Image (tube, rainbow, N blue to C red):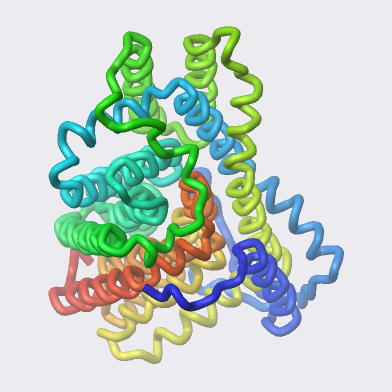
Length: 461
């Protein structure tokens, strides 16, 4: 753990990156690729990069990036608020608290390390099969579970945020990264899933063991935990585990919660629901909870506003992160960065060029944190580069997936991870201190698998 390293507050960190992006608009030449519409999305035309008039940004552009960033991120910002309200009402009802307390009492009290291990894989599978932001409302469950077995909020982020991020990043069936890449390359959708499945399993295994190791450390010596000083009062069980029992209302609310998850999955897989549709589901469920728990002693309005207040910092951070992307696009330097990085790859030997693609995508992910957006912007450039270097399209796709997925673990410009850590009550700088050693291990794993893909001529080409 890099506990002793002092990091700036996440707001200062993002604000500094915004300033750096403005300064880069004076140094990096402006340029752009031609783009065409494919399946309703704008895709880069390979070999079409050209320099354009320099667009250095002024102080007015800098401050205009704030409202424009919040505008572009409004879908994520609202789902944070909607899920926060829904869980605020559920916490007021006490249903999830009761369910987790009974689960830990019956299954995890004698072997809590197995709870950490299994929970990490469960959240990982949610990332693999459901998506990223689609799981945002489930993150506080990990906070309640972690505290119930004597862990802290940092462990909760390792279980939920780590699990979802690694599972989503390495998913063999990720529609946003793999799906978009295969459409661009004209490959059979989700072909070559075997190697990616092995990679995903080992990624989640390393994470699960890392979480168990951290849990053992803080159980033996609580003072070394990175969660020291964090407010966990809203997640912690209010009485001994033995005193929790299900009431009729708890059973009804739990059934409705499971039904909501089922509805969400049905909508995602059958109707391609995304953030706005899921926000509407959360709002609808919140209204049902409010109706069921309402009485003269329960102030629904107060609970709602307190819930909004809890998640507001995370929502603000998402808007701030989106402002960075606005600055880079307004200065027309994001395409130039992608072009220059891709040009470097041609000079590398074949085996190292594939690994180089992984690192290039990792860098670009800080500029274009959307997986599908990054694929549409970079893969039409990198696939022809791969052809020149003798790399199969599956290898290029794998390098892209690893670069995008792994760097998401530490990417302050990625709104989803900012939102999830905030819902666990963990500042982003604490998350970085916890996750960075794991990031290095997962990065080494990704490099190994990309190297293997070159050796075995991972196909079809």
